[in-house]
Image: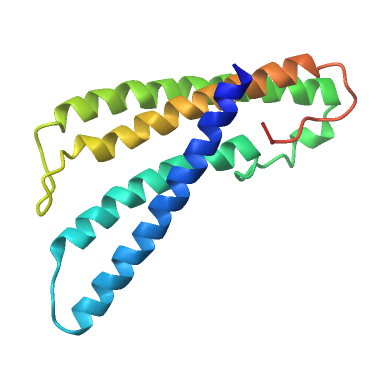
Length: 163
């Protein structure tokens, strides 16, 4: 199971990296062509598609690595065990929110399956499904964070963010 998870993480990193490179390339080419008064509208649509995928997959990678912003000004004054209980409770709330996002993302993707981009014949739901994929990946990362927090509950230090 661990090998599958690490393979998924590597695939997510590769997809996000390649999509970001193409995103930058298409936006750059579009800007250069616009300078010469040439318009390629499909560049913008493809850039929007790639932006959605890189943003949501990047959010999951940041969540897994513990690189998202957190405010612990009040909770760091509590004992370590209380901090861990609060952390687990917050992870459960985050996981519930991610499940709701995934459910409504699936519903939105089903509604958007008929709509296509203006300039490319790709269903809009292919972009919308990026939210669902990232949310489910974040749910998996959150489950692993909860598991690690419970396993290390009696240790003296608070867990870091890396999965």
